[in-house]
Length: 259
Image (cartoon, rainbow, N blue to C red; front, side, top):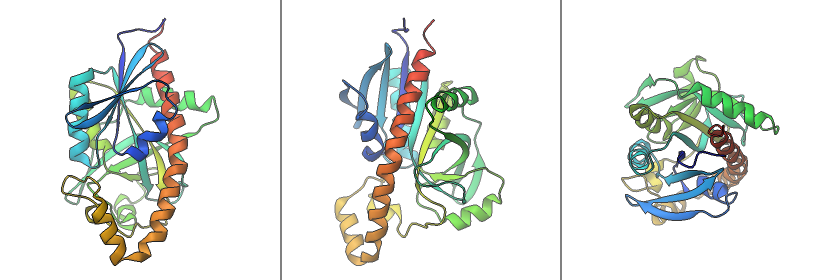
């Protein structure tokens, strides 16, 4: 029988990342904490809390602190989308964080490793059903960055690097609280595609999407439309595979608590 007192936390930035996961969940309750959506549901007798952080390191850090304070989870899963920096990753592939870097004011620094035992557990559990999770390095930035520049700076030192905007901030909070973290991301854009816009053009100062900013940017630069349509399709594809991986991760982690 599962441990009724065990709880797990999950942090994801955007509704587009969360919706495919919730579609696989039966019977979740939606609430609010510190102005953020919080979803709660049982898995194998354990309680899972999923918080929607919003985009960027500052939002991710604040949401993780709120989640830890509210749920006191035994472990946390961070998941979402990311952009491949080097060839070798295709759209829709899944990458576990083996190393995590923070890009801050142009300086690249590495954080302590995410929990390697949890990463191995998830990788092996997914492999049993034929779902491959590859190991790679995450680069957490506060916005969209040029991939060619990132590749040049890394110089081949990191396998399968992925650009994203939250994991380092989540990792700092979990490690400060002594909570193990595992991070999974689906590739939404391949290495050969540089994004033709900045996050700031679409968002307010807190990196919340603002519809009129999106519309204004597209009206001034309509050549962005094909890329945005393509990215939307890529995210749907990556989201389906990512949701399966998250579901399998929850199964693996909650079964760990069973005698």
